[in-house]
Image (cartoon, rainbow, N blue to C red; front, top):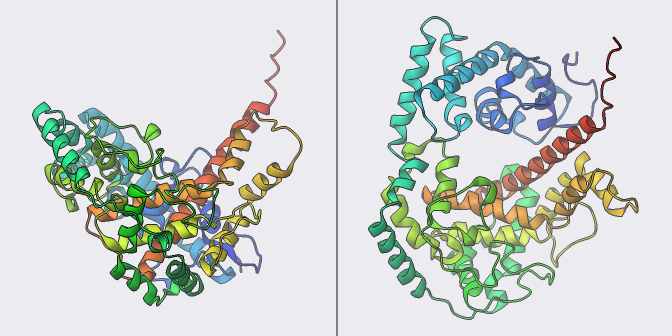
Length: 460
């Protein structure tokens, strides 16, 4: 028998769609973990549903992006069976946010910091009851202690000292002047042949992993460092076999990356391109996104290391991460969500996997229709702007990839092989796709609400 909330179709279904449908079937109970439209928040899926309910490591049949009918029913059942604990989790989260405000705590994203703690509380205690206020206060204090002062506020205080800022600025100038920026030929910079070999192996192997000796060869030869130095020195043309994209793929707004500054503030809404960020902005993103800050170095050590890292090739220390930038660039310039025929020489199985996934998206199909429609955009440009994003998908992809690799570099989390690199590359592609889908849905909801006729006033 098909599950109550899933359609009785024999077709394979996207796992994300199965989760969305099952979640909506839970009703208003977990509202604090849901978005305005009733779907689970992205962080809910990332921090609660997948690791704590689905647990793909223990249920590998549920780890795939597309599930057959039997697997979809299993996933649906897992979520429905967790309805009570999810509702309790939502109530604990509401209580922790209320207590957080009362204590004047402003550091960190509450979802990142508390979602998994709330699930633990719900599993152990059920819904909040007598004594819950004291438990919530203890959890908040524990989270603050665990961060060990690794907060944006601590970073701001550390960089507020004028003498320290002057010393850091001098260190940045010395590190920047000491770079090895030498002209490098285009083939050496991106090594399109080896990169294509790795992407072909990864795309063909999929989630099963890939044995790609070319990845190790690229790391040993330092191809990531070569690309970073080429961008400093020669700003080579046609690195990616495409004349319509910049060699740095939007990682800087400048012809050549500028020397990083110290900085003292940051805003998520106005962050510049990765290579153009200050020390403060680079570490701001790390601290904002960290769910286990106790694993990070202390703020003074974070700052000290970032001086050298920000002046290193591609803004990264580890060569396996730099090589992953090269691979990501090669993948990014061949992304073609609209199916417009955009391609690069030597498109690979990885390109076919990612492009095929994007081209099946309903939001992408609508955007594709808009790009060929002669009619003006009726919404004043909102949807047209979203369609335009799909014409240059490499920009959002590379920006998100660099941020993810930078976070790994700060934690000394190298990528040991091609399979682990592909996990990051493919994960970023999914993330960008889901973000675009969410933006389209938000725009459509806004337009639909605006189109609704105003209610008729009642006659006296």
